[in-house]
Picture (tube, helix red, strand yellow):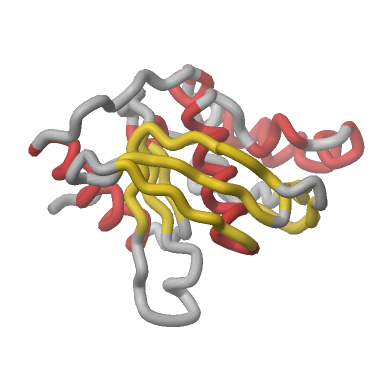
Length: 169
């Protein structure tokens, strides 16, 4: 396994719509293992393939590893089947936009369907931090970033940090 470089805003690849992974192979399995190692080292709770420059529909999450034992989830070609009408608002951070936390409203639960590394379809009801992580990473697969979810006041407040990231690119 190896650590992968994490792309930072404003890299244009973070805005691209990702293509299907399809049937998993050794390359996909290695990518997932490297992404998990990278996520834990960052240290993050999730990482999407476009964040490491791979424009495929793959993300890894482990929402509770910082508070307990690791329980990683690798999701290939994920999709939301259903979501709660009720939303909860909370802070989110992104490894690709360091130093810019954003308050985001997300459904309190989602039904997620994905393929695992063996190519088997899985479905689970995720709630709380797991739902937030899955939705955040799914946004990455669709070229959407947490800064796109900011209101005008929050965007003005974050402007200096975003300008600094843009200047570092």
